[in-house]
Length: 93
Image (cartoon, rainbow, N blue to C red; front, side):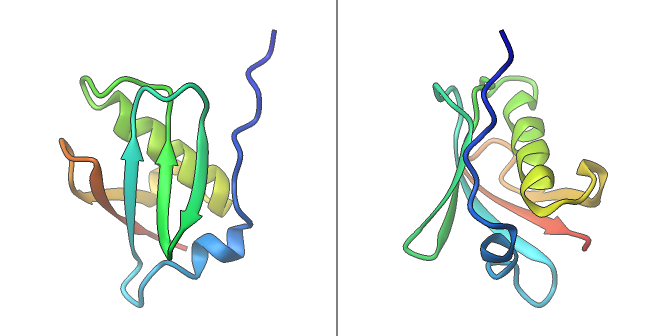
């Protein structure tokens, strides 16, 4: 059985949250039942199935953001928050 596609807001809505220097703040929920991106009160929330061990959740968030923005995961860099739920990424568009 195939994995269900993650729920995502339109890419324009996610791109609007990226600042002038290409930074994007994300609040992450690891170990969720489903994968999804949500915009709530002007903040981007990411839910990923991966557990927060050995960077697996960070990689899952990177792949989820890449799919939402239509860019390669290699163009998304984790700037800070490697062990925190509050993360900041740099996006090369």
